[in-house]
Amino acid sequence: MKDSLSKKQAYNFTPGQVITGKWHGNKYRIIRILGEGAIGRVYLAQTGGRLVAVKVARQAMSVSSEVNVLRRVSKVQGLSLGPSFLDMDDVVTSHGTTSFYVMEFIQGQPFMPFVINKGSEWLGLFTAQLLGDLHKMHAGGWIFGDLKPENLLITKQPYQLRWIDPGGITKAGRSIKEYTEYFDRGYWGEGDRKAEPSYDLFAVAMLMVNRAYPSRFRKTSQKGTDYILEKVTGAPLLHPYFTVIKKGIEQKYEDAGQMKEDVLMALRNQKRAAVPSRLKRKAVLKKRNAPVNKTAGTPVTRERKGYLETVFFASFLLTIYILYLVG
Image 1 (cartoon, helix red, strand yellow):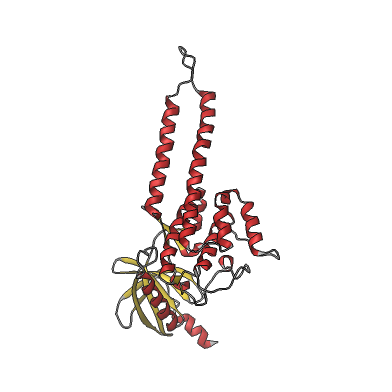
Image 2 (cartoon, helix red, strand yellow; image 1 turned 180 degrees about the vertical axis):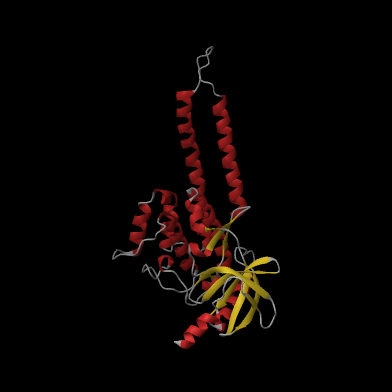
């Protein structure tokens, strides 16, 4: 008990405390805690005028393992959504020696609050971007594993999805050790926890479902896929992505690239459906309120023409933005 308490105190740092690397001598001033998991804690810190994320683990082996994964995954060609590795060292405190590593601190908004405040198109946009990155990760022989909103951020200028915790990333073919039940196919009785692309794609489908059910529902005695699809049917904002979600949880996709193409198709279909319906509503309002041309006896059409041009221009810009982010 005393030994366990001592280990916990060894990685319990306070705001303002400066930790100095035993081997490299780099100093990090702790600002606040960012999060805590099964392996250890992540702190926001400052060094040399820049902000960084410092992950302190209970066991040195955990640090070495995560750093090894982070370094190897960062070498996957075209993969850019994860944090950059900066340093690894030990820190000596009055409670013992603790291992830590330092990553790039990614500033942004939490994924779920961001997409909840936006339209369903944004859910599709960032899902497509995530799938593009997963496709590259899988091709490099790695599986994300613990894929959930808490591990994703949206950065600004331009808006871009980034992942922030490499702790669950697993070599393909091995067993997933870190997972969150709601996004885990094993929890829903839809497969084992073997690290393979379909495991991540199931989690992506549940990520989309989570947008409509932020508090997350629990499994019942009903078959997992049947219950999930029942929930999807009851959420209108998920209807454009029904086919994507269904194929994802039933694990019908061969790879993330296929799932990404279906998401992009759903986005294009939403745009085609949205423009006519908006124009129809606008036309009805214009017809009711439009001034009448006394000489010709017809409504003035200039404003309607300008609205049409604005709608199609906005649609064009959205298409360009999607191609820029996920192309």
